[in-house]
Length: 434
Image (tube, rainbow, N blue to C red; front, side, top):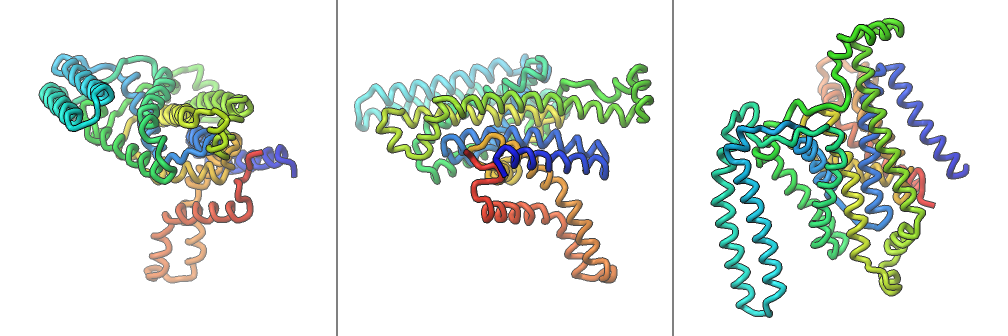
Protein backbone atom coordinates (compact mmCIF):
# COMPACT_ATOMS: atom_id res chain seq x y z
CA UNK A 1 0.00 0.00 0.00
CA UNK A 2 1.41 3.38 -0.99
CA UNK A 3 1.84 6.05 1.73
CA UNK A 4 -0.90 8.22 0.17
CA UNK A 5 -3.38 5.35 0.01
CA UNK A 6 -2.51 4.35 3.56
CA UNK A 7 -3.16 7.88 4.74
CA UNK A 8 -6.53 8.03 2.99
CA UNK A 9 -7.48 4.68 4.51
CA UNK A 10 -6.54 5.70 8.05
CA UNK A 11 -8.29 9.06 7.87
CA UNK A 12 -11.27 7.25 6.39
CA UNK A 13 -11.24 4.94 9.42
CA UNK A 14 -11.43 7.96 11.73
CA UNK A 15 -14.34 9.34 9.69
CA UNK A 16 -16.15 6.00 9.92
CA UNK A 17 -15.63 5.91 13.69
CA UNK A 18 -17.11 9.40 14.04
CA UNK A 19 -20.05 8.56 11.79
CA UNK A 20 -20.65 5.36 13.75
CA UNK A 21 -20.65 7.36 16.97
CA UNK A 22 -23.21 9.74 15.50
CA UNK A 23 -25.48 6.92 14.38
CA UNK A 24 -25.21 4.83 17.55
CA UNK A 25 -24.69 7.39 20.32
CA UNK A 26 -26.06 10.58 18.77
CA UNK A 27 -24.63 13.36 16.69
CA UNK A 28 -24.14 15.50 19.76
CA UNK A 29 -21.56 13.02 21.10
CA UNK A 30 -19.91 12.74 17.69
CA UNK A 31 -19.50 16.53 17.41
CA UNK A 32 -18.10 16.76 20.94
CA UNK A 33 -15.46 14.16 20.07
CA UNK A 34 -14.75 15.85 16.72
CA UNK A 35 -14.20 19.28 18.26
CA UNK A 36 -11.83 18.08 20.97
CA UNK A 37 -10.15 15.82 18.41
CA UNK A 38 -9.40 18.82 16.21
CA UNK A 39 -7.93 20.70 19.17
CA UNK A 40 -5.89 17.66 20.22
CA UNK A 41 -4.62 17.31 16.64
CA UNK A 42 -3.43 20.92 16.78
CA UNK A 43 -1.60 20.24 20.06
CA UNK A 44 0.03 17.16 18.51
CA UNK A 45 1.03 19.20 15.48
CA UNK A 46 2.73 21.77 17.72
CA UNK A 47 4.65 19.05 19.56
CA UNK A 48 5.58 17.41 16.25
CA UNK A 49 7.19 20.66 15.13
CA UNK A 50 9.50 20.44 18.13
CA UNK A 51 10.14 16.70 18.33
CA UNK A 52 9.54 15.55 14.75
CA UNK A 53 11.38 18.46 13.07
CA UNK A 54 14.16 19.15 15.56
CA UNK A 55 14.27 16.35 18.15
CA UNK A 56 13.50 18.69 21.07
CA UNK A 57 12.17 16.63 23.98
CA UNK A 58 9.54 18.98 25.41
CA UNK A 59 7.59 17.53 28.35
CA UNK A 60 6.01 20.86 29.23
CA UNK A 61 3.19 20.95 26.69
CA UNK A 62 0.68 21.39 29.50
CA UNK A 63 2.17 24.76 30.51
CA UNK A 64 1.90 26.27 27.03
CA UNK A 65 -1.66 24.99 26.64
CA UNK A 66 -2.55 26.62 29.97
CA UNK A 67 -1.00 29.93 28.88
CA UNK A 68 -3.22 29.84 25.82
CA UNK A 69 -6.22 29.41 28.10
CA UNK A 70 -5.09 32.34 30.23
CA UNK A 71 -4.88 34.51 27.11
CA UNK A 72 -8.63 34.04 26.56
CA UNK A 73 -9.29 35.55 29.99
CA UNK A 74 -6.86 38.42 29.49
CA UNK A 75 -8.13 39.32 26.02
CA UNK A 76 -11.87 38.64 26.05
CA UNK A 77 -13.19 39.13 29.59
CA UNK A 78 -14.39 42.64 30.46
CA UNK A 79 -12.16 44.58 32.86
CA UNK A 80 -13.19 44.82 36.50
CA UNK A 81 -12.95 48.59 36.83
CA UNK A 82 -13.31 48.62 40.62
CA UNK A 83 -10.40 46.17 40.94
CA UNK A 84 -8.26 48.30 38.65
CA UNK A 85 -9.01 51.34 40.78
CA UNK A 86 -8.26 49.47 43.98
CA UNK A 87 -4.83 48.16 42.98
CA UNK A 88 -4.57 47.17 39.34
CA UNK A 89 -2.17 49.91 38.32
CA UNK A 90 0.00 49.27 41.38
CA UNK A 91 0.24 45.61 40.37
CA UNK A 92 1.45 46.63 36.92
CA UNK A 93 3.97 48.99 38.51
CA UNK A 94 5.21 46.20 40.79
CA UNK A 95 5.59 43.82 37.85
CA UNK A 96 7.52 46.49 35.96
CA UNK A 97 9.81 46.94 38.96
CA UNK A 98 10.38 43.18 39.16
CA UNK A 99 11.19 42.90 35.45
CA UNK A 100 13.52 45.93 35.63
CA UNK A 101 15.32 44.37 38.60
CA UNK A 102 15.97 41.13 36.72
CA UNK A 103 17.19 42.97 33.62
CA UNK A 104 19.44 45.22 35.70
CA UNK A 105 20.90 42.21 37.53
CA UNK A 106 21.69 40.49 34.21
CA UNK A 107 23.36 43.60 32.80
CA UNK A 108 25.33 44.13 36.01
CA UNK A 109 26.52 40.52 35.98
CA UNK A 110 27.71 40.84 32.39
CA UNK A 111 29.51 44.14 32.79
CA UNK A 112 31.32 43.64 36.09
CA UNK A 113 34.53 41.64 36.26
CA UNK A 114 34.47 38.21 37.83
CA UNK A 115 34.94 38.06 41.55
CA UNK A 116 33.26 38.42 44.91
CA UNK A 117 32.31 42.04 44.29
CA UNK A 118 30.19 41.08 41.29
CA UNK A 119 28.30 38.44 43.26
CA UNK A 120 27.70 40.78 46.19
CA UNK A 121 26.57 43.63 43.92
CA UNK A 122 24.09 41.44 42.05
CA UNK A 123 22.81 39.97 45.30
CA UNK A 124 22.30 43.44 46.81
CA UNK A 125 20.50 44.65 43.68
CA UNK A 126 18.17 41.63 43.70
CA UNK A 127 17.48 42.04 47.41
CA UNK A 128 16.56 45.71 47.05
CA UNK A 129 14.47 45.04 43.95
CA UNK A 130 12.63 42.14 45.59
CA UNK A 131 11.88 44.22 48.68
CA UNK A 132 10.51 47.08 46.59
CA UNK A 133 8.51 44.64 44.46
CA UNK A 134 6.88 42.99 47.48
CA UNK A 135 6.15 46.37 49.07
CA UNK A 136 4.24 47.44 45.97
CA UNK A 137 2.69 44.13 44.97
CA UNK A 138 1.36 42.60 48.20
CA UNK A 139 -1.04 45.39 49.29
CA UNK A 140 -2.21 45.93 45.70
CA UNK A 141 -2.92 42.20 45.25
CA UNK A 142 -4.84 42.02 48.53
CA UNK A 143 -6.92 45.04 47.52
CA UNK A 144 -7.80 43.54 44.14
CA UNK A 145 -8.69 40.11 45.52
CA UNK A 146 -10.94 41.70 48.16
CA UNK A 147 -13.24 43.17 45.48
CA UNK A 148 -16.31 40.90 45.40
CA UNK A 149 -14.24 37.69 45.65
CA UNK A 150 -17.25 35.44 45.04
CA UNK A 151 -17.83 36.85 41.55
CA UNK A 152 -14.68 38.80 40.69
CA UNK A 153 -11.58 39.24 42.85
CA UNK A 154 -9.39 39.71 39.78
CA UNK A 155 -8.52 42.35 37.21
CA UNK A 156 -10.48 40.90 34.30
CA UNK A 157 -9.36 41.38 30.72
CA UNK A 158 -9.47 43.78 27.81
CA UNK A 159 -13.01 43.03 26.63
CA UNK A 160 -11.94 42.33 23.02
CA UNK A 161 -13.53 39.76 20.66
CA UNK A 162 -12.70 36.24 21.76
CA UNK A 163 -11.32 35.21 18.36
CA UNK A 164 -8.45 37.66 18.95
CA UNK A 165 -7.55 35.58 22.00
CA UNK A 166 -6.51 32.63 19.83
CA UNK A 167 -3.50 34.32 18.19
CA UNK A 168 -2.88 36.11 21.49
CA UNK A 169 -2.63 32.70 23.18
CA UNK A 170 -0.03 31.72 20.60
CA UNK A 171 1.94 34.90 21.24
CA UNK A 172 1.80 34.46 25.02
CA UNK A 173 2.99 30.85 24.76
CA UNK A 174 5.68 31.86 22.26
CA UNK A 175 6.97 34.57 24.60
CA UNK A 176 7.17 32.13 27.48
CA UNK A 177 8.88 29.59 25.21
CA UNK A 178 11.47 32.18 24.20
CA UNK A 179 12.32 32.91 27.83
CA UNK A 180 12.48 29.19 28.65
CA UNK A 181 14.44 28.33 25.52
CA UNK A 182 17.11 30.98 26.12
CA UNK A 183 18.07 29.20 29.34
CA UNK A 184 17.01 25.57 28.91
CA UNK A 185 17.68 24.61 25.30
CA UNK A 186 21.39 24.25 25.97
CA UNK A 187 20.67 21.36 28.30
CA UNK A 188 20.98 17.71 27.36
CA UNK A 189 17.75 16.02 26.25
CA UNK A 190 16.93 14.38 29.60
CA UNK A 191 17.67 17.57 31.56
CA UNK A 192 15.62 19.58 29.07
CA UNK A 193 12.66 17.25 29.69
CA UNK A 194 12.96 17.77 33.44
CA UNK A 195 13.26 21.54 33.01
CA UNK A 196 10.23 21.88 30.73
CA UNK A 197 8.13 19.66 32.98
CA UNK A 198 9.09 21.70 36.04
CA UNK A 199 8.39 25.01 34.31
CA UNK A 200 4.96 23.81 33.16
CA UNK A 201 4.14 22.88 36.75
CA UNK A 202 5.24 26.38 37.82
CA UNK A 203 2.85 27.89 35.25
CA UNK A 204 -0.05 25.82 36.60
CA UNK A 205 0.88 26.73 40.20
CA UNK A 206 0.78 30.42 39.29
CA UNK A 207 -2.65 30.05 37.67
CA UNK A 208 -3.95 28.19 40.72
CA UNK A 209 -2.66 30.65 43.31
CA UNK A 210 -2.65 34.12 41.74
CA UNK A 211 -6.32 35.01 42.11
CA UNK A 212 -5.80 38.57 40.87
CA UNK A 213 -4.79 37.13 37.49
CA UNK A 214 -6.96 34.04 36.91
CA UNK A 215 -9.20 33.74 40.02
CA UNK A 216 -7.20 30.66 40.98
CA UNK A 217 -9.23 27.62 41.93
CA UNK A 218 -12.42 29.71 41.88
CA UNK A 219 -12.21 29.58 38.06
CA UNK A 220 -13.20 32.17 35.48
CA UNK A 221 -16.62 31.35 34.06
CA UNK A 222 -18.83 32.93 31.42
CA UNK A 223 -16.12 33.46 28.81
CA UNK A 224 -17.40 35.09 25.60
CA UNK A 225 -18.13 32.83 22.63
CA UNK A 226 -17.44 33.24 18.90
CA UNK A 227 -20.69 31.45 18.07
CA UNK A 228 -24.31 32.19 19.07
CA UNK A 229 -25.83 30.93 22.29
CA UNK A 230 -28.29 28.07 22.03
CA UNK A 231 -31.07 30.05 23.69
CA UNK A 232 -30.70 32.82 21.11
CA UNK A 233 -31.05 30.32 18.27
CA UNK A 234 -34.07 28.73 19.92
CA UNK A 235 -35.77 32.14 20.13
CA UNK A 236 -35.22 32.78 16.42
CA UNK A 237 -38.41 31.85 14.48
CA UNK A 238 -36.44 31.28 11.28
CA UNK A 239 -34.10 28.83 12.99
CA UNK A 240 -37.01 27.02 14.64
CA UNK A 241 -38.73 26.67 11.26
CA UNK A 242 -35.54 25.32 9.64
CA UNK A 243 -35.13 22.83 12.49
CA UNK A 244 -38.72 21.67 12.06
CA UNK A 245 -38.10 21.10 8.35
CA UNK A 246 -35.24 18.78 9.32
CA UNK A 247 -37.41 16.96 11.84
CA UNK A 248 -35.53 18.31 14.87
CA UNK A 249 -36.77 20.17 17.89
CA UNK A 250 -35.21 23.65 18.41
CA UNK A 251 -33.22 22.58 21.49
CA UNK A 252 -31.51 19.66 19.76
CA UNK A 253 -30.98 21.63 16.56
CA UNK A 254 -29.43 24.59 18.41
CA UNK A 255 -27.02 22.31 20.28
CA UNK A 256 -25.91 20.61 17.07
CA UNK A 257 -25.62 23.91 15.20
CA UNK A 258 -23.39 25.50 17.86
CA UNK A 259 -21.09 22.48 18.02
CA UNK A 260 -20.93 22.32 14.23
CA UNK A 261 -19.93 26.01 14.07
CA UNK A 262 -17.18 25.39 16.61
CA UNK A 263 -16.02 22.45 14.51
CA UNK A 264 -15.80 24.59 11.37
CA UNK A 265 -13.74 27.23 13.19
CA UNK A 266 -11.39 24.64 14.68
CA UNK A 267 -11.01 22.84 11.36
CA UNK A 268 -10.16 26.12 9.61
CA UNK A 269 -7.41 26.89 12.13
CA UNK A 270 -6.04 23.34 11.89
CA UNK A 271 -5.95 23.46 8.10
CA UNK A 272 -4.10 26.80 8.09
CA UNK A 273 -1.50 25.59 10.59
CA UNK A 274 -1.13 22.26 8.77
CA UNK A 275 -0.54 23.98 5.43
CA UNK A 276 2.06 26.30 6.98
CA UNK A 277 3.76 23.35 8.69
CA UNK A 278 3.90 21.43 5.39
CA UNK A 279 5.38 24.44 3.59
CA UNK A 280 7.97 24.79 6.35
CA UNK A 281 8.79 21.08 6.22
CA UNK A 282 9.47 21.16 2.47
CA UNK A 283 11.42 24.41 2.53
CA UNK A 284 15.23 24.71 2.85
CA UNK A 285 14.62 25.73 6.47
CA UNK A 286 12.75 22.47 7.11
CA UNK A 287 15.52 20.40 5.53
CA UNK A 288 18.03 22.23 7.68
CA UNK A 289 16.00 21.50 10.83
CA UNK A 290 15.89 17.78 10.00
CA UNK A 291 19.63 17.80 9.33
CA UNK A 292 20.19 19.34 12.76
CA UNK A 293 17.87 16.74 14.28
CA UNK A 294 19.74 13.85 12.67
CA UNK A 295 23.27 15.06 13.43
CA UNK A 296 23.85 18.25 15.40
CA UNK A 297 27.63 17.93 15.20
CA UNK A 298 27.67 17.71 11.40
CA UNK A 299 25.18 20.60 11.08
CA UNK A 300 27.26 22.73 13.42
CA UNK A 301 30.38 21.94 11.41
CA UNK A 302 28.56 23.20 8.31
CA UNK A 303 28.09 26.57 10.00
CA UNK A 304 24.52 26.19 11.30
CA UNK A 305 23.67 27.87 14.60
CA UNK A 306 22.05 24.85 16.27
CA UNK A 307 20.94 26.57 19.45
CA UNK A 308 19.33 29.45 17.55
CA UNK A 309 17.44 27.08 15.26
CA UNK A 310 16.30 25.02 18.22
CA UNK A 311 14.99 28.19 19.82
CA UNK A 312 13.07 29.05 16.64
CA UNK A 313 11.29 25.71 16.40
CA UNK A 314 10.69 25.58 20.15
CA UNK A 315 8.92 28.96 20.01
CA UNK A 316 6.88 27.99 16.93
CA UNK A 317 5.72 24.66 18.37
CA UNK A 318 4.82 26.26 21.69
CA UNK A 319 2.85 28.98 19.88
CA UNK A 320 0.75 26.30 18.15
CA UNK A 321 0.09 24.64 21.52
CA UNK A 322 -0.91 28.03 22.93
CA UNK A 323 -3.42 28.56 20.11
CA UNK A 324 -4.87 25.11 20.80
CA UNK A 325 -5.13 25.93 24.51
CA UNK A 326 -7.00 29.15 23.74
CA UNK A 327 -9.41 27.27 21.46
CA UNK A 328 -10.05 24.64 24.12
CA UNK A 329 -10.78 27.23 26.82
CA UNK A 330 -13.13 29.04 24.42
CA UNK A 331 -14.96 25.78 23.77
CA UNK A 332 -15.25 25.05 27.50
CA UNK A 333 -16.45 28.59 28.26
CA UNK A 334 -14.37 28.70 31.44
CA UNK A 335 -10.79 28.63 32.69
CA UNK A 336 -10.22 25.86 35.25
CA UNK A 337 -6.53 25.82 36.30
CA UNK A 338 -6.97 22.63 38.33
CA UNK A 339 -8.05 20.76 35.18
CA UNK A 340 -4.61 20.96 33.58
CA UNK A 341 -3.04 17.57 34.28
CA UNK A 342 0.17 16.15 32.75
CA UNK A 343 -1.60 12.89 31.89
CA UNK A 344 -4.03 14.66 29.56
CA UNK A 345 -2.00 17.59 28.26
CA UNK A 346 1.48 16.09 28.00
CA UNK A 347 1.51 12.28 28.07
CA UNK A 348 -1.53 11.88 25.81
CA UNK A 349 -0.17 14.42 23.31
CA UNK A 350 3.07 12.46 23.12
CA UNK A 351 1.11 9.27 22.48
CA UNK A 352 -0.71 11.03 19.63
CA UNK A 353 2.57 12.08 18.00
CA UNK A 354 4.24 8.68 18.40
CA UNK A 355 1.25 6.67 17.21
CA UNK A 356 0.48 9.00 14.31
CA UNK A 357 4.06 9.19 13.09
CA UNK A 358 6.79 11.45 14.44
CA UNK A 359 8.06 13.86 11.80
CA UNK A 360 4.90 13.57 9.68
CA UNK A 361 2.45 16.46 10.08
CA UNK A 362 -0.46 14.44 8.73
CA UNK A 363 0.50 11.64 11.08
CA UNK A 364 0.23 13.99 14.05
CA UNK A 365 -3.24 15.08 12.95
CA UNK A 366 -4.26 11.45 12.50
CA UNK A 367 -2.85 10.51 15.90
CA UNK A 368 -4.64 13.41 17.57
CA UNK A 369 -8.01 12.45 16.13
CA UNK A 370 -7.67 8.69 16.61
CA UNK A 371 -6.19 8.70 20.12
CA UNK A 372 -8.71 11.24 21.35
CA UNK A 373 -11.56 9.09 20.01
CA UNK A 374 -10.16 6.08 21.86
CA UNK A 375 -9.61 8.12 25.01
CA UNK A 376 -13.28 9.13 25.08
CA UNK A 377 -14.92 5.93 23.90
CA UNK A 378 -12.82 3.24 25.61
CA UNK A 379 -14.27 3.81 29.08
CA UNK A 380 -17.97 3.30 28.15
CA UNK A 381 -17.05 0.47 25.79
CA UNK A 382 -14.94 -1.10 28.51
CA UNK A 383 -17.81 -0.87 30.97
CA UNK A 384 -20.12 -2.50 28.40
CA UNK A 385 -17.60 -5.27 27.68
CA UNK A 386 -16.96 -5.98 31.35
CA UNK A 387 -20.71 -6.06 31.90
CA UNK A 388 -21.00 -8.83 29.32
CA UNK A 389 -18.03 -10.75 30.72
CA UNK A 390 -19.31 -10.59 34.30
CA UNK A 391 -22.98 -11.22 33.42
CA UNK A 392 -22.86 -14.89 34.58
CA UNK A 393 -21.60 -13.83 38.01
CA UNK A 394 -24.24 -13.08 40.67
CA UNK A 395 -24.90 -9.53 41.83
CA UNK A 396 -22.73 -8.59 44.76
CA UNK A 397 -19.89 -10.88 43.68
CA UNK A 398 -16.56 -9.36 44.73
CA UNK A 399 -14.85 -10.06 41.40
CA UNK A 400 -17.76 -8.62 39.42
CA UNK A 401 -17.85 -5.46 41.52
CA UNK A 402 -14.09 -5.05 41.22
CA UNK A 403 -14.08 -5.43 37.42
CA UNK A 404 -17.02 -3.07 36.89
CA UNK A 405 -15.46 -0.52 39.22
CA UNK A 406 -12.20 -0.69 37.30
CA UNK A 407 -13.75 0.18 33.93
CA UNK A 408 -12.31 3.70 34.11
CA UNK A 409 -8.80 2.25 34.01
CA UNK A 410 -9.50 0.80 30.57
CA UNK A 411 -8.39 4.17 29.17
CA UNK A 412 -4.85 3.81 30.48
CA UNK A 413 -4.71 0.12 29.61
CA UNK A 414 -5.84 0.82 26.05
CA UNK A 415 -3.35 3.65 25.56
CA UNK A 416 -0.56 1.36 26.69
CA UNK A 417 -1.68 -1.47 24.43
CA UNK A 418 -2.08 0.83 21.41
CA UNK A 419 1.36 2.32 21.99
CA UNK A 420 3.01 -1.08 22.35
CA UNK A 421 1.28 -2.53 19.29
CA UNK A 422 2.17 0.44 17.09
CA UNK A 423 5.80 0.46 18.26
CA UNK A 424 6.02 -3.28 17.64
CA UNK A 425 4.51 -3.45 14.15
CA UNK A 426 5.05 0.12 12.92
CA UNK A 427 7.89 1.66 14.98
CA UNK A 428 7.78 4.94 13.03
CA UNK A 429 4.04 5.41 13.52
CA UNK A 430 0.95 4.78 11.43
CA UNK A 431 2.03 7.43 8.91
CA UNK A 432 5.83 7.39 9.01
CA UNK A 433 7.99 10.32 7.99
CA UNK A 434 9.10 10.01 4.39
